[in-house]
Length: 151
Length: 415
Image 1 (cartoon, rainbow over the protein chains, first blue to last red):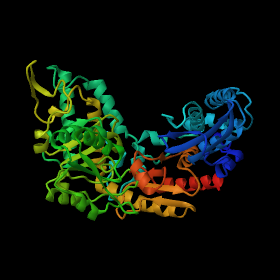
Image 2 (cartoon, rainbow over the protein chains, first blue to last red):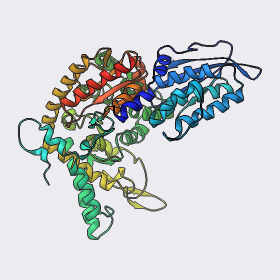
Image 3 (spheres, helix red, strand yellow):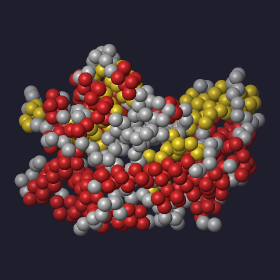
Image 4 (cartoon, chains in turn green, blue):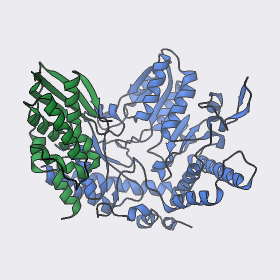
């Protein structure tokens, strides 16, 4: 197996492919706030829906079209942040961002299910795909009906 | 040095051509490079690389200014490059050849200068569904400024322009038609001579985006009778940052300057400036001298091989590629026009083009994925993005086989 092939297996792990095929929380939330994110480079679009109660994420979901990485990242993100406080979400985002942008051999924090996306580090061109849902989530939390772009 | 590819023979000798392009012999991810992103930019033959190095080693100076020897050499080489471009496009006169940064700047020049003086309130600019953003946005900006309207010629599902609609959309309000010669996203070759004939019946001038055409087919601006023709050097084996605007002398002559500055004037006082003659009126500031000279070397390289030979070779390769991709399960071609050049675009059931691009890259295969700067076209096709393999004269059937094999890997990962 060549280095390229093992990188690919890191990137397209079974869990990621599953989330791509059957994404969790792939629906709209009618009574919450939302933001739209797009990556002009590849045409990816994601809308993140969010309902906050008492400073906690009561419900979160997403819709849109995108590559396997952005879809899996959105799916895993919605699973992970549900029930968390906005402050905890912010900390998760920072750790996640560090994980996918750090040098391939640098140690990263344990991030539970989100750790399957660490393989993105080998593919600098794909970092934006993984981070798009998170940027969109943050802007949904900050300003309802915002549009964000990775450019 | 004569490139190895110019050895005689009726057919293009692709192995000899490949020897002229050093980058093709450097592996990526430990695999041989299969470069199929030629519609984005082409690789450069040694002749072009050497010519640019020679300029900086032996001829570098500013042009049209100094009386010293180097300035004379640089000016001669730069103006000789203009003559080479003229011959390449079969234009009448070298004053019709304006050096610009690329196709985008050429279109912006015409939109600003010609459009700025000829398009008014309630006038119309006519473009097509399959235009690159570079032949949409400059006209949108112009229309917004002038209170004019941008109208769009639709296409059929195969990716061919609806010529009946084109004719119906032309009116006394139409001030200019902008059309792409070869679609970068579909490969469709548009019938430019016919489009020009129809537009001219109404007295409407036509600007052609030739960025994707010049490397694949002979272009004769007099035979096409187009009013403006534009292309970029880097898409025909030349350097980036240099391109060409061809314009009929009478039109260019009547147009106001695009940018002001040095070299575009004949005399300046604070009261009044007299503009320089064509083409210098449109070349403000120090031009991309080495770029123009490198472009000329690229055009000579192409001419030595012969565009007719290149067209024939690529047509065969495109047909081979079309057949090979048709056998890949789950793959659908986008762009199935009767007349195509250089482009194999496709979508894959359940796999986003971006993921295809990443997996292919690890197999050494470079393709482009995304909207190809044609978002309105993607909307028309009903897809967010496509994958595109685009051909050049150095690609081989074996490389197409590698592409098809790599697409099998995509299926293995995703299906």
